[in-house]
Image 1: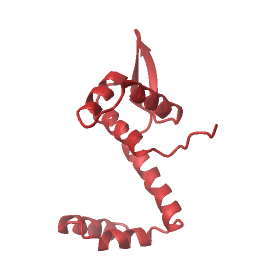
Image 2 (image 1 turned 60 degrees about the vertical axis):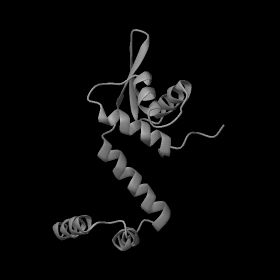
Image 3 (image 1 turned 180 degrees about the vertical axis):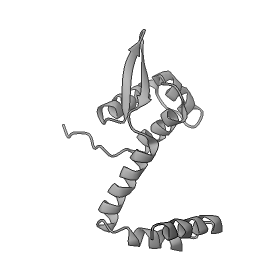
Image 4 (image 1 turned 180 degrees about the horizontal axis):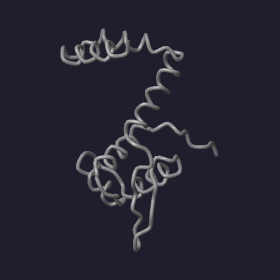
Length: 125
């Protein structure tokens, strides 16, 4: 069996967003109930995915009575930064310039977002 990739899948990222939004540890049931409002999902699928997230090092679990309580082991910004870095390495051979060019040329960026990008680039000098 192939080892699990440390990269987050779309479904794992969706679950991590739920966990990050909570100020207190969450149970599988908490995540399952929130996911169910968006799409059909099996409880066992959520449970397996959260165990996988724990194995990948994104969640820490502690047992409380008969349930496990999960909390993030890494801050959201740290995870996103690593995901972007991995994406730039994989897609753009480590060069962020082409990524920035794609973002600036993207019609979905608002004027405010473009101004913010320009401001951030000015602060890097």
